Picture 1: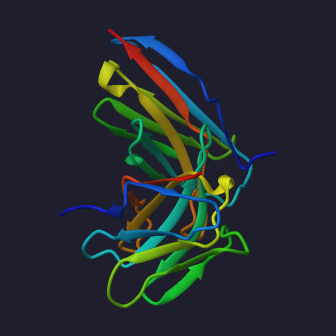
Picture 2: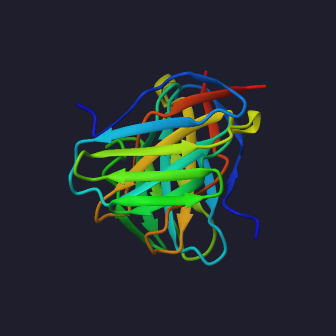
Length: 110
Length: 113
């Protein structure tokens, strides 16, 4: 079993839709949770960073962490074609080493 | 702030040659990380370095791979005697050392022919 599981997609939605992206994990020591966006042939870009359980909102993006279920989510409201990318969840415990999911490919069509 | 700079962007090597990948961290960042990304896979941790020190190399293959972050100059990931399976995108990231997530570079795409 992988430490971090993420549905690879692809996920295809119309412009304006609410997108839900999810990851599950097995290591209860994880306490830092991140979402990165990666455009084709580019490096990952940090979108959201959360410590421990709870919600965090930044513009159209909301990150949720449920440590009791070992489940994290990223919601994108009013999705735009420019949101089309691969979204990677990542997490770490008491070290600086990030464990990444395999990424979910999102396509938002006009 | 130029961000994390990696070069070259693309590197082609024949089997058996050496590959040298360079990474200059963001200004003020003293922590450097190298990750490898294979097609259709997530990023896999390779090594974590601070100036003149390897902190965690648990993701580095035992042979042919080495990394350094000298007092002066960029961090270098070195792959000796490359094989086809080394073909991947190699990403460098840096951080100031607090737990706030990394900043990644644009990567070096290594192709072994």
